[in-house]
Length: 408
Image (cartoon, rainbow, N blue to C red; front, side, top):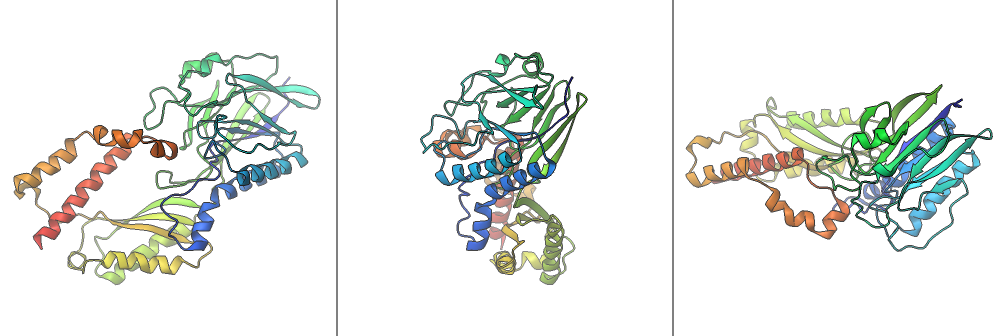
């Protein structure tokens, strides 16, 4: 007979993320962003205590680097000690970012923390009221790249009424991610698990609603513009053998894109108000926001004739406005993607050819060197098809903008 279970499934905490490229921001804002990965973990621990869960599953990449810092380890230890005081267990696997081949000063974890250190799946039992009611299976990366199909090795090995597989890996055929520990849906079904606690993909996804439930919770805190939207974890309840789960927000700083249609903007005052309105919507999110502002629609004549640098000044005005705000809406950029009256059919053949090259060109050769660079691979994933399309669109916008300059 299965005793009811409640647990939290989270992954990809990425503590100590460096947040490259934004250190020039005002110190209070950069400090809030840099500490956001730590704050999101506090939110999760607060929720675990509030909900009185049985245990927490952390499915890899707790740390952003294999050479994890002492600061991050001691922080996590303190959070785990809070859970110990409430009788809450923690089950941990390490992934490609925080693999066990790194160098760091080791610390002792509290006794409520159970770490899967094996290179192949092993089982750890969870007991409640003196009975084993769940078997949890997992393994940790011993090096950054693990390309074998480890999911096929998972099998039930106890008579526990509930079985959970923890895996940091990629569904075979998924684009935009390194194929670490590739698995198929069949692999997961054949294992006999009731719930698969996945990690590695930063966008939350439910691959299977049940039999078994297969879930990526996404990362707990976004770190750049490729990770927009709410971030957090899943709260999972098992009642009489039935599984229910609900996404819960845990981010401390939200990253978003906001489009502003300037077609009806009669002057700069109107445009300023349009951006203010976009900010007002973002303020309802309940947390600080880093936003990429995008001007879209048909560019009005006054904007086309505005002095060069006008939009840069507008961006600076909003940044100054937000610099002292605790719950800031920080505009990282203000991008002009408005439609211009550039007649592509009458272009010089040279420029027409450029547009054709952009539209039909293959970016894989251009990006190959970048994606092979060790620094890039350490901090970013491969580009998805959606992102490649966006790169082409941005290139066309830049080219149109330059053509407009040539016409004036």
